[in-house]
Length: 332
Image 1: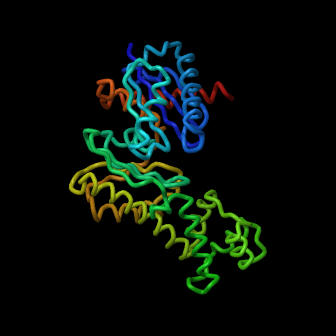
Image 2: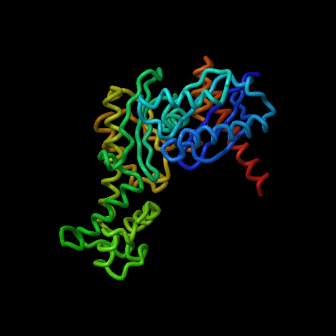
Image 3: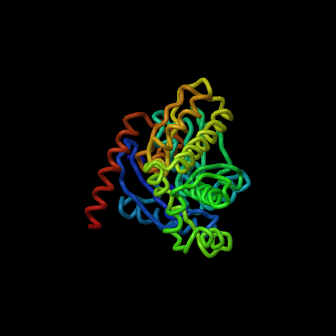
């Protein structure tokens, strides 16, 4: 039996899967953050080693049993980082070929029916990348959020919401129920205290407030509704940038929606869809409903010469659901 490894290295955790050539999951490993920007390359290596050791032990497999591996790595943003990334992954001493990609790509491969297209991430932050059908060409944005004019994850939405609250205070914009939301969240005495404290660093409005903005919008607040429409349009424009780079305008393909912001439904995705369809009418928006690490396994399989067919993909999805249920029962 041949086995394949997939790893998803994020800002808060590292997930690692081992699956056989049919897609049946043999083991799962979990460790701490793997983003070198926060834990350094030593921390990245430690997390990978911990997750790998756990998975190999649970599967009762030697490292030599791994035939191919895929690594989705948060913080792998630039070609200049590639050599150091490869050097760090190579220290796992796997006797198998491996591929490293930005951590958005496994979500695309896992969520798109044919494993290619565009992925839009909207969680705490935002990002967008794409792969062509042959996985030879990649499109991208910078992934550096509002600094580079890319929006919108929860951070960017909350930042923009606070600007709109200020607009109401200085009479540049309309009154909004977001003001009361932020007063309650911050504990500020009144709006002037909120604005002063926010600009002086005494009060912060963190991304966890973003779901409450949707509640305010659903209650009928026009400013909040316009804000969410703005966020959806911004996400659509990020997707369109990647679509143009890859010349997907006339194709039919999946746009995979990944991240917690998309849990808020059509108020965000409807304007996003409208913006994308102006450029690519054949784009299909699909929600990522499986762990991105599945995509990393599929990348590892492809890198080793095993073309993942629909049956393998289906087995992976079904077996991870059963595997996670088993883990939950064992930990209960």
